Length: 574
Image: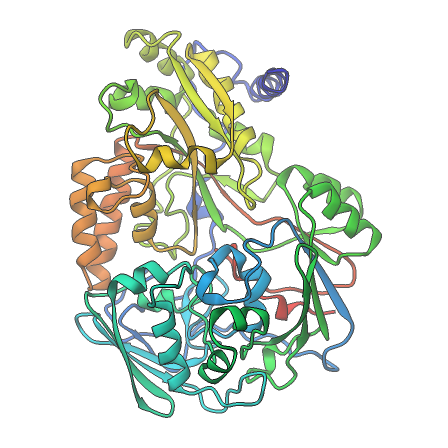
């Protein structure tokens, strides 16, 4: 409670400085920048598909060349020295892609290739992927993949279409548990090799999003060598002795301490041959420990919390990392339950208008690392992105009056506080929103927890028994289908959390999910985003950067914007 009051005091100080201290007078936020102004528009990949401006503009065809340049300067003198990277979690510490998840890619992804590359904003491109072309049938059920020739695994064996077909079969097998494995298990039909470097992948139902599934931005479908997997006796043996074709070669690890890789100087893409001879990734769960490693020179790059960014700069270090990687929103828990007061749209609108999001962003995030959000589709590469949407206006006077008119003064609402690895600021955001709702007349109840504890309540009846909020994040690299499915649609149409559950939204989602035409998909995604916005379904908070501290031994780095996973450590240059 002491911290809650302290934050309330600091926010009130900000409001006074901005002229927003009076809560009985309607006001608008002092920040009017939209998510469009803060996001970088990604040039579209050349395509024969209908012209579109969304992430699936190349959903039906990815040709051999790309209009987006993602080339890097190769190392001037070849790989040299060791670069040490400190991260807060090793995930499940598996080196087997079939049983790992996308957030674990900084741990194991350095030694594997993916079929599609990415431009600097996370859009699929053939420029730096293992496939030189990917084409779809009109119904998006059959995909033809043409591999580059001359790629080799780290043991010198050539990468062929047989390896890719084998990889898809592994991901679709019953024992696999990767980010996309469930989707593969439900929809994959076959992978037929048609030549040394070509294959056809067939799905039971249309899979218009397959192109994005082939990147490392949001998925884990890496190429696995058939000969080595079989020689190792399957998943367990492969996990102990992994082998890929990527820019780094697995060397050594100690569970709970470090994982180490050596540069692949024979990598097929000379521009992405590592600049450092050795990549050492160390585990340091606490942000203060990671900062200390940077200050001592024991780490050269470290993932930091927003709160520690000023300390990074004060130590004479730099802030680096991918831009606009995720959007955080406050979700009203299961408003489809009629007994929850915010089932009423007017109540949701009042709660949203009571919060000065711009002040929260200013108080929590270092300048330039976050912008107030209007929608989860916050960057132009996301289907449904609407640059005309602006963050909801802060209107405390109207909010307080509406709360009084609705008889909600003193209404309790539970606010679950938990943090994820890439979003340690979640609890503080809840505290800030609670401060505004207290001013507006509600009685928020902060409840610290971890997500694993409350996750079962999202999945099985009786669910939650009291009105509550939780924080929801959408990575910019994810598909809009994935964001809708996890965050807002009803359980009876495949939703996970049922954070909203509006029948009209469910209907749009059903049409969108089965549509294979990119332009029509974009329109349907836009309709879904507009409905969420117009009905005050969630309170978007911020679209944020990933904050890494960078030491003096690193001259440059080119991570992929819009992704928390595509860290591209091979692009680190001394």
